[in-house]
Image (cartoon, rainbow, N blue to C red; front, side, top):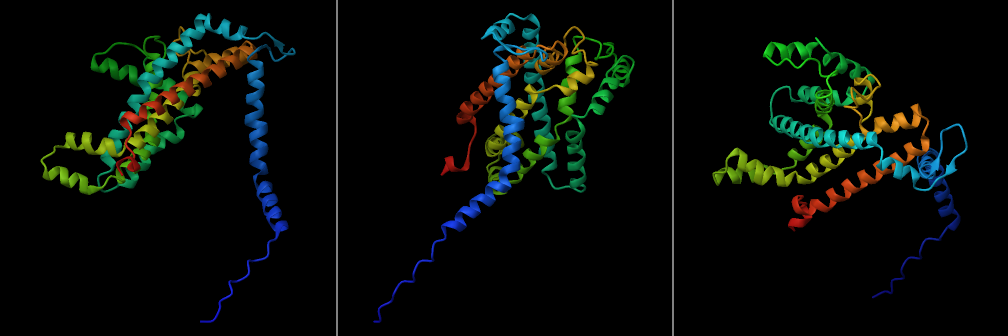
Length: 309
């Protein structure tokens, strides 16, 4: 049997590898520059300002944790936390419930399905615009469409925008109206559920509710977790709709004083940039804590495919 000589390894070209790395860094340089100048740099500056007395006009003066101490004793800061928590707790579940309900309807084959998907998704594209905020304010003002409809049905509450007890619910209605994005994600998850599971459940006599509870929810639990996480973070960041609907007052009677609205007032109206920076970092810590709790809780109710293997 003839002796076979293995082929010689290709000659190494260290210069070519360096050129490839240089080309890669060159293509990444716009992103790296943007990250350093527009994200990392401002974050580091705001962290420093959080421990200073800074009003945008004078040099920052180091004061340690005074901004945080002042924050915790500020009644309006406490009010902003209360309003934001109420908005998150009410708005996020309602939005996800509506998104899941519509996704379940659209998951069934029917004529014009593509049109319905686009129609339901459209509010998510325009809902955060200033123009929609003005329209929403007009709809919920005194003697407007919502007020007249309520009066026709026998509910005489007046316009929601001018009522401290109702104005926050107009913001909740606006965020629920923008259910298109989580709906599309739910719909993608529903399409991945094997039809064989439903057929086997029907043979066993399981009804629609039992099929939904025992098959649909466990199978789309990763998608549900993703939507809960994403929409919760978005709810904490509400600003534009509250600012526009309240006519830039975050009122009436601080009823729409969400956290970011108060942060804006302290930073840009009262020029207390140090205090506003401290507020921003507290918001970051709160969102990080909620995110950590959600990730911790997913072990109890989120089912991944690799877990079943």
